[in-house]
Figure 1 (cartoon, rainbow, N blue to C red):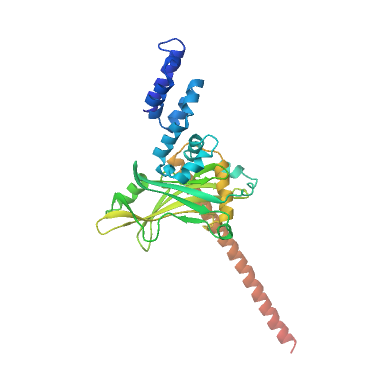
Figure 2: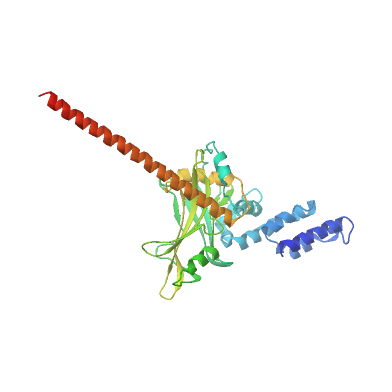
Length: 347
């Protein structure tokens, strides 16, 4: 059911409650749930729950939100994810409100975050629920559990690889020589990477709705698609990090495009991968932070702003290093001249 038809239905129900037709209260709740509410998507169901107290009670049914979550993210049907969601305050509705909206921070929100985030909680594991779509067709779905309390995890760069060694995925994309498949892949290949913290009972989707960047690798000629959101770095001060999912695709002899690699990593403005400890702080901040409506254009513009800021910081660092090199060189020459003069004067 479309949003417009739902709005009309809600208006009709409100009119009925005011005396214009059959009263809403005369309709059996089972009829409303099985013939109306189960046809709505997540945003529409959430809007419908605001129409009246009766609808709020009916729309909070966990089975409705479970079906919506399973259709939006097939990976949520996995028993490990299902058990984690069952501990959320409002079950699948809480999970949906965490994972569906974008966790993207605007530049103003990043600049305003000056206080350092709280230290990470005693999180023992992180669950990654990953789904890859081509348009609305599911290409691949997988759930992975990462131990988050070991010394190795906390002190080494945090990176999660989706595919096993030599595993590849078949996609409906076809390779062509004119390069148009790159734009088609960017527009039609969609990735969802939801990270769940079972201890804190929160979740966040670290992948942008569409690829914010598509580039061809200079050596292998593979296509790399990046799905990233930008967030504030630990400690504030206006520094930023990107939570990025990189999908590497390559063509075959039959002209078919296959996914060779899918990985998730959090990088700072120097392009370095953050350790597990620092990544936990970033993820907790993203889970607790504000959400916004999914907007591919805003995600792409924010990522481009991140790249410009990153380039500016790199140039500033190079100028600083060049200045230090000049100072060291000048100091060295001065010391050398002083030693020569002392040598001649001592004779």
